[in-house]
Every structure is written in structure tokens, then in C-alpha cells.
Amino acid sequence: MLRAHWSGRLAFILAAAGSAVGLGNIWKFPYITGTNGGGAFVLIYLLCIAVVGVPIFMAELYIGQKSQANVVESFNVVAEKKTAWRSIGWLGLVSAVLILSFYSVVGGWVLDFLFRSVSGEFLVETESEIQSTLGILFQSPVRQLILHLFFMVLCVLIVFRGVQKGLERWNKILMPGLLILLLLMFVYSIWLDGFSKSLTFLFAPDFSALTPAGVLEAVGHAFFTLSLGMGAIITYGSYLKVSERVVPTALAVAGLDTLVALISGLTIFAVVFSFDMEAKAGPTLMFQTLPVLFAKLPAAYWVSLFFFLLVSFAALTSAVSLFEVVISYWEEAKNTSRARACVLWGVIIYLMGMLSALSTNVLADFKLPIVGLTFFDFFDNLTSQYFLPIGGLLISLFFGWKLSAKACEEITGAKGIWSIGLLWTARIIAPVAVGIVILFKILEDL
Ligand code: TRP
Image (cartoon, rainbow, N blue to C red; front, side, top):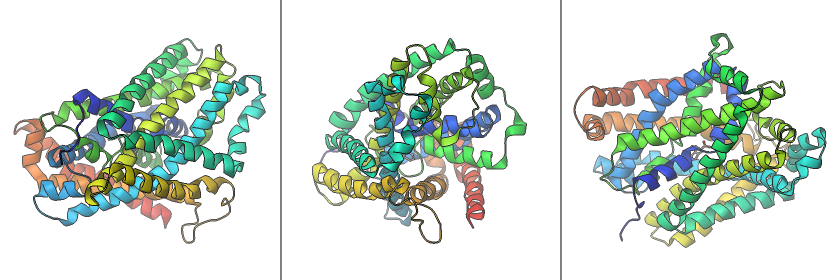
């Protein structure tokens, strides 16, 4: 059977940027930058993207593109034999299922805010009413389950249509849509009083505000935001024709992702500072602080609508990449149809996601034994703090030690400083950086 392919390099870049640009960029990056004091954290984050993120991105892209195979099989193909390294693929599959299960729940919250923006209800509500929206949603199991269902169904419908007719087509619509909405909001924010303060906050580093925990968070986030450590880029890369070059492609995706994070941050903090609010709101920044502030701005209806539309696009294009990892594996390994795989895994992931959707209400008081977390927090912590970094660490070692210099020369096009740099980054620098993060996480959790 002939394997599906992207129609070209641009299609891959849009799809991979669609995967990378997600809630991590628009929801998480601004709030962790806020809680970590701004500029110094941003600088460390950029460093992590360059030193750890980009090399591992290249490794994943190389493994996928070279093997033209799903996340488990790809390790066997590039190693040219059946190898234990393929367990990285198993870990990736488990991560994909777990992440998507709660990502879809959060995607549902975003859709809720989108619907409320469309209806215009924030315009007529009082400040405290707007602020209580998220809490009301949390208290309503039925509403959460319906929204989670809605988001999962969208995701299934896109992936079900296949690589070109589903993923490529929708990324080609949603990603430019996202970029246009973001630029409109950004240009708008330049005229707000808080813009210059936002610039200073993000780009004038104050190292006294940076904590060791902040540095760890930056490394972890570099993974999450580039969709690394679980084979999403391996899978998307496996649909890229072998003739396309790795380096410019990887740089384009990482560059786009970073740009979107920075522009979102600038825009959001321009709004926050225009009302003399604090940057430290945390996870509720997007769902409680922003809707209140949006309602006070000129053209409030459109600001809120555009913003939540933009976030919905970002969440959906990331979710489909997680789903595709599972589907491409299942379809090929079990020799079944894409439709069957989509229905089966759509249902399983929906059911697992119910545990997260109910974690804010019915199951709020249920804490998992030993770890003492709700399902939602457990799935989130387990994947983003352990599975992704461990996956990334192993991929880096596999690439650096097993595929070694030959792969690096193939990627960079020649022997020389760049290929040697990539080799030793993959062999030592990235694994050590990530290893330290995992170690600290273990110590913290003990
Ligand atoms: N990168 C996405 C974001 O920033 C989330 C995501 C999609 C992801 N696919 C992934 C994270 C794979 C880790 C691994 O929101």
C-alpha cells in the first residue's frame, strides 16, 4: 500500500506548526511567563528552544522522514533491525492518548468561551459574573462532557479524512486563519496604553525574578510547545517526502512557534497592563482575567470573539496531531481502516477524558492514591513532566549514539562544525539538560 504524503514542504510546515502552536503558546506561555517574572524567563525559554528544542525537533523529523513509518516502526526502520528503542514509540503512544484525553477537555472550555463570545453575553454581564464563568463551567459535569464530546468529534472528523484531505486541508485553513487573527489582535494591542510596559516585561530581563524552578519549567515547556518527546513530529515527518531538507523545515516550524508565543504574550500583557493588573494570575489568566478586560476595550465583541476563535484553531490543530500519532500506528500495525481506528480510539480517548472533565466537579474530591492528584492533574503532570522529557531524552540518545554522525551529516549536508555541533548536542547537551530536569522533578515529587 502506498503511504500518504503531504503535497509539499509548505503543507508540512503548516501542519507541524499547527501541532506546535497550541494552548501551550497562547494559554500556558503567557501565564508561566507571568508567574516567573517576565524577561529573564523568556530569555531562558528562548535558549532552551535553541539548544534543546530545535536539535530534538530535527532528530524526530529525521527519524520520521527517513523511516516513512509510524512512531513504533520508525525506530526499527532507521536502526535497520528490530530494536528495543521502539519502546520509545510505545511510550509515545501512551503519551498521545493521555495528553489528548485532557487536552480535549481544555479544548472544550475554549469552545465554551468561544460560544459565549459569539452570543455576546460578556458584554452585558458584570465583572464578577464574567469572572465566575469558568467556575460555573467547572461545576457543570454535563456541560463539560458535551463540550469535550464536541471537541473530540471535530478532531476525529478531521483525522478520519486522512493526511491530505483531512490534516493538510484543515491546517491550510486554520493556520493562516490563526496567524491573521493573531496579527490583527497584535496590531490592535500596539495602541493600548499597556503595550510599552508589555514590551519591557517580556524583553527586559530581570534576573532577580528568576528561580531555579522557573528554569526547569522553561526546559519542560520547550518540549511541550514544540510537540516533542512523543512522536508527533516523527509521525508528521513520516508523511514528508524524503527529498525535503530537514534543517530549514525545522527552523521554520520552531521559528513560527516561538513567534506566536512571543506575539501572544505581548498582546495579552498589553491588555493586562492597560488596566494596571498584575501579570501573575496563573492558569486562570486566559479564562478569568482576559474576558473581563476584553469587555472593557473598544470593539469588545470582536476582540473576545477573535481571541477565542484563535485559541480554538490553535487547540484543534494541535489535538489532531496527537490523534494522528495513534491512528497512523493503529491503522498500519493492526492493518485496519482509518475509519475503524478513528472510531475506536476516538471513543477510548473520549471515555478517558471524562475522568478529567469530571475532575473539577463530581470527582473533585477523589484523589488518586499515592500521588494525591485528581485525574486531570495526574494525566497532565505525568505526561508533561515525565513522559515527554523521558521520551525526548531517549530520542536524543537514540539519535546521537545509535544513528550518530552519519545522520547528522545527512541532515546538515556535510561534515563540519554544524554536524559535529548537532551530534554532541544530541549525545550530551540535550540529554544532560533534560536529565537534570527529570531528576529535579523526581526529587520534588518524592
Ligand atoms: N504543542 C502543543 C501546544 O503547544 C501541544 C501538543 C500537540 C503537544 N502535540 C503535542 C505537546 C505532542 C507534546 C507532544 O499546545
